[in-house]
Length: 212
Image (cartoon, rainbow, N blue to C red; front, side, top):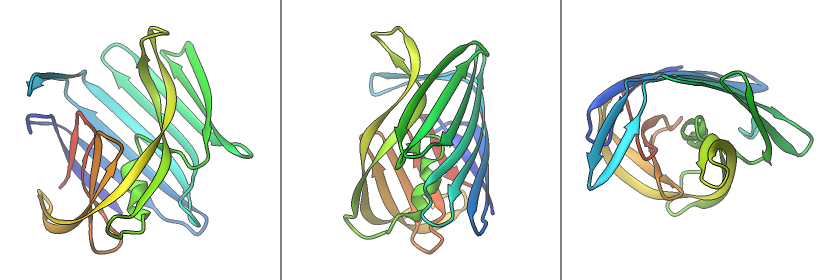
């Protein structure tokens, strides 16, 4: 299954595109995505949003039994730098290694129930969609600015995931009835109410994905 998404900035201007392919298997499900974003700087409600021109590719493997994360490789290239992330399963944790510009290296261990920010909207399509369903998971990222260290480093935080209910939704692919799911304070995803609950729209705080 292949999905195409239109990417928009906070002013609803199209700034890029995303293509993802899901390959199911008896043991492993694989997700392969490629994203292209044109750089932009925009202001909305006195908040400034900036993103450099970015090319991202990620390949993720999930268990076909419980959709837990098994392995991931993520490459992000922006105008001035490159970020390469590799995640593998250990006995009771996930090991995330991040290399910036081929030299700077950081590594952390994260809980086995972790979601990576890159792949989480698709993996959450396996949620039990019931009104007011609530759970928690560790949401992990490859790079976030740390003011104390004065550099970008990987990390994670425990985050609430809540199914808020059904609502009508219009995207370029058509009109749907959708489940709305919030992930923490700044991420929201909408899924088709009909199985297999295709991701229709996703907002991560700076970009919005719309299914084409």
